[in-house]
Image (cartoon, rainbow, N blue to C red; front, side, top):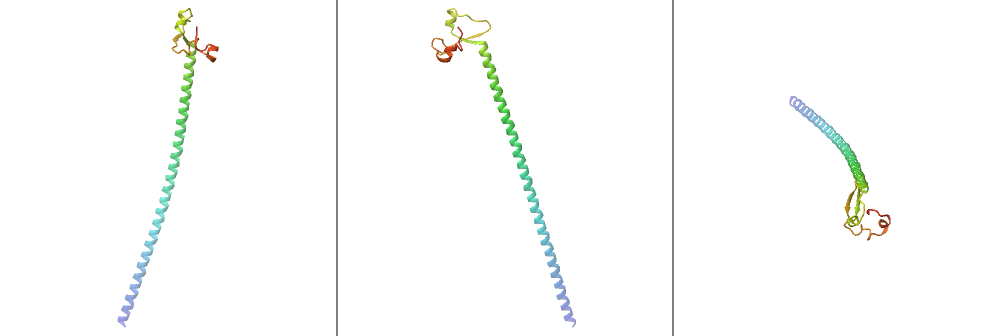
Length: 140
């Protein structure tokens, strides 16, 4: 009987070893599943943070673009205002005249700049329409 008891004991020890190995494999599987879930959650969190960063970048870019557009509009407006000031100055200080008309007795006012017109359209004999009726642009 001794041989049978030894065989039974060896069978029982092997069965216990198999159960112990199975438990170890189960624990390893559970650890791997837990690790995979942790990695999946970490990846989802990283994706969420990337989306937040991308949205922030889009908002900052939109703000910068809006500021650049506003600055450009302001510069355009400032340029228009400067052009208007220059035009007013020219209108006040510069007169287009026909030097031939001045030589024939036209009066020049001191402090004004006189520019000879080269276009027949500016000469009073050849102008028509509103400019001719109002005398705009030419002093004689």
